[in-house]
Length: 129
Figure 1 (cartoon, one colour):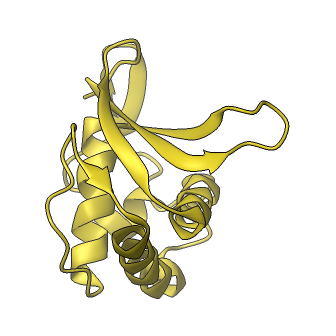
Figure 2 (cartoon, rainbow, N blue to C red):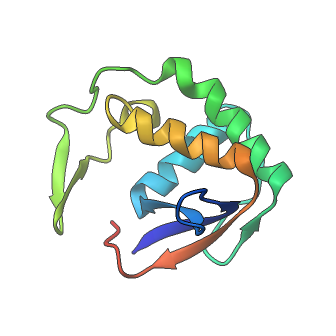
């Protein structure tokens, strides 16, 4: 099952709230990385609402990690097929997990955290791990 994060922020073009999706493993890595860099928030599980203040604290911790996330693909060769998706293996560190092209998605998530609160929901329409 995947996790969908729906923001309070409204997209200027679509008029819809922004949405960010993570498969289960990636969502776990985001929270693990944030904790490693000082975030002390609640678990943030599906059904939770993350207010603007908590989202900012999460963004602060994730920004602290940015210099340690490689710009190159540090996962190369350490992936496995799960369902229809190729995902990093369990031995990939959280900083490696978001390396290379995934760093762009990571930075976009930080930007959305800076924009305000968000709701965490399960998204059965998207495969998770």
